[in-house]
Image (cartoon, rainbow, N blue to C red; front, side, top):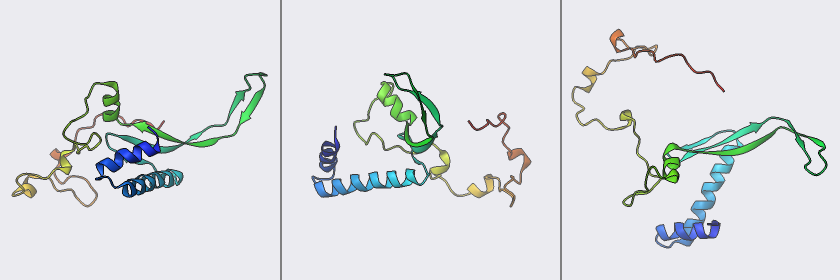
Amino acid sequence: MNKAEFINALAERLDGDQQLATEALENTLDIIVRTIESGESITFMGFGIFEKRSRAARVARNPHTGESIPVAPTMTPVFRPGQYFKSVVQGTNSLPDDRLAAKRTSSHKSFAQPENTAGAAATTPVAAVDGTPSDPSATPAKRGTKRSAR
């Protein structure tokens, strides 16, 4: 699929509005490029992460002559697919028929609205100003050592 075909497919979903589809795609791509260029990353849960990575200086070889050629360090854009995206491509998950494929809801319970909010404050431990729980029994158990950065 090329850009024109993508815009046509997007326009079909936007009630045939070709102009809106073109502007939506071009502005989305512009935001991605500008954000990555500034050094930030963009994360779409379940879909993937766009980020900027540095490549170290290295020595390459000319395949015809075998001559060593120094290559300067560079920055490159990278896309890392999310777990849901990978599982759909690998065939372990199937695409839903009744909703958007990339529209994912959070699996974190903290984002969901509680059904009964009455008395919720009484059962939830209150954190002190320094961030530690006021109830020592509410302190989570340590899972292990913190992994070092790669």
